[in-house]
Length: 238
Image 1 (cartoon, rainbow, N blue to C red):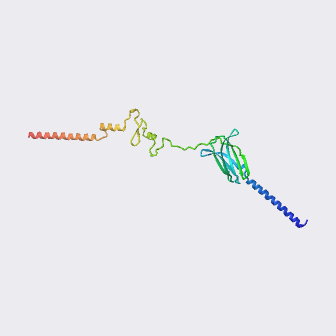
Image 2 (image 1 turned 60 degrees about the horizontal axis):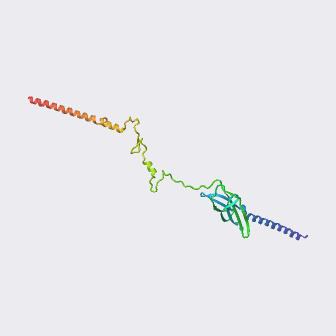
């Protein structure tokens, strides 16, 4: 065999190996991008206190898929929850079905993915079982009737009643807000009564001074009368 023939044969083998490698690479890439059942998943979730069933499609090739959800009962379809079309993305595209699922309920999710005349998926994903706890409805806290106020800013009737009701029969509220306790056993005298008694008896007042001045005036007047009468008598004798 001449040198030129050997060179040509070697080049042909090299080209053949390269073509085979490229074909395998393209086949692997095509398989990686092809839509499959493994790209789909489902979950029973709560959204704002209401139940939903969410189906996620992570098909990077973007093959349109029809998703149908059924409620199961002892291995058979009880009713169809809904049907939607989803186009998958690498990050994952989602569709939601409103469903007030009960704890432990079982759902069947069927996926049909086709492009043109080629069908990529026509199967069920693994059965979906709802969580053991149902969704709780959201509740808004309401103010207590005893502390609530009306739109005009006035306290509620219960608050007004509690503010105007006396504290009890044992205490009496004063203008300053203090309470005077009653005399225990009824033997002690209140300060007001003590002041009244002092006023009646004249103690702790100006009564002794006035009485002393009056007595002095009476004595002076009596002495003046006495001396005046003696002077008049002496004049009559002369």
